[in-house]
Length: 456
Image 1 (cartoon, rainbow, N blue to C red):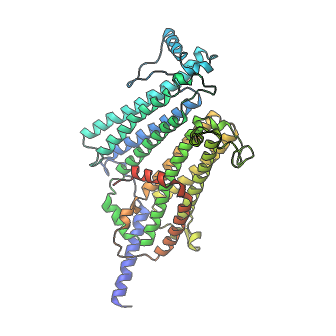
Image 2 (image 1 turned 180 degrees about the horizontal axis):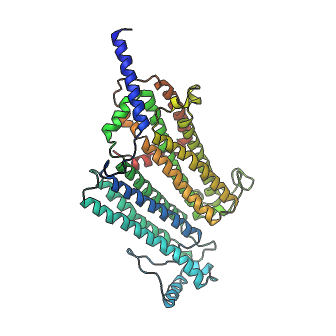
Image 3 (image 1 turned 45 degrees about the vertical axis):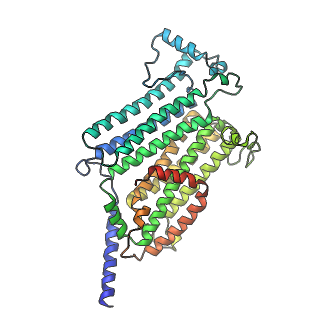
């Protein structure tokens, strides 16, 4: 062997060893002030995201208990609830002047207090989330604990929160107008407005999670990510990029499925076609196109919205299973290589994210089918909604943990290519083919997700 060939072999071996060491350590979150002075800021952002999940849950229960139209007025800062019997009587009398009362005339004052409590709690929790964001943000800004370049994100987040409050009232108003007095069906808010309200909440939550993870991982600035990328073989890095792209696609698909679930909830469509896998013996329900104009079927037809949600749910599960399979069990696709060799392009954080995707997706599918077959009891319906957030979070976390495989880092010049590169490249090609086939219908949603959460 010539001296030049020996030098190249030694360099390649050294690069593989360095990449292996970096991958084993992974991109850990710096949660201690000694490692990251911005750690309190990152924890606060993630804590606020947790409060938003609470908001989503309480909002779901508010709808499930038919409490959303109990408060017929709105103000920016809110007010104290009725306390005395006289105040309760006044509030109850106001409620009786609106359309929903025409269908619920057997309601007692005690019943009204119950539904009013859920709606009041939901609204006040929303205001509490606003305070929990604005006050610490002000403090951290004064103390210089908001990282450079992040103030625009903070303004974006607070704007999303404010808009969400307005969207909430816009939604409620759709069930209070005099135009609903002649409705024979149960008075509800407009499904499309309910869907908008939930989608805004999920988008805000996703932006908070991504920002919090960015801040806790701020020590892994571009130069550190570039170092890891430069030491990996081209095939391995592209394989990681494929898994990251799949994670982002799954995030977008989960968001679309959540939106379809909101349409099911808004139409109370979960209480129809309570069989699985067919819909009352039909694979495609006969009433799927009954409404005119045709586009109303997409948002107001019980058969259509449930069918769409089933298809999207099953597709999400299939994409998740494919992603986890190629990410964690890629050895079979690589011709019998060991699992360790097939997943050398993944950090421990990415592997944990993929495992979380598998577990949460399986649980969510089970919850959805169980809820449907049992005529959607409140407990299962609320758990199913939280399950969707768990899947969304898992895929978002996985994509973030693979940020060393961003497209911009793939453009870095490579000095070496590891022997395992072709193996990882084969896995990546197989994963890419599957992702393309499974995700063709959600390209637009994926682009929107990427634009919103991708750090420049």
